[in-house]
Length: 148
Image (tube, rainbow, N blue to C red; front, side):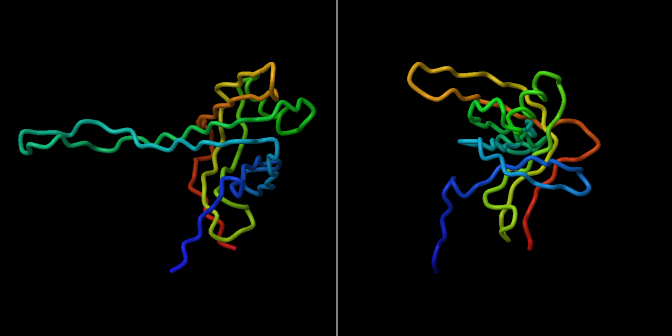
């Protein structure tokens, strides 16, 4: 059996430039590295019934960390900066492949930009280490799978 591995370069990050009901995904080519830090919260469920420490799952956390090139005239850069400055949201889709490739999987949500620091290295490109967290809106976050 052949095992196909994916490079991080094959993964894509998109911003919706239309509506939630009828999305139009625009690839965010100014994004460099991405970390989708998905993890369950848990709570202690131990009782005297067992000698083992037991847990129950509570809520799923899925912050996204993006390295974004400092390109002030880029529409995606502007959308992220304005969402940060104004406390508004941006709808994004973070996939492990292209939005047109069957089998690509990821997560779609409205996100708050909670961090937008600007790195200005003496020897290097200016970048932003952007942190996104899911926002409470009328659109529930969802796992996303490309089927066609």
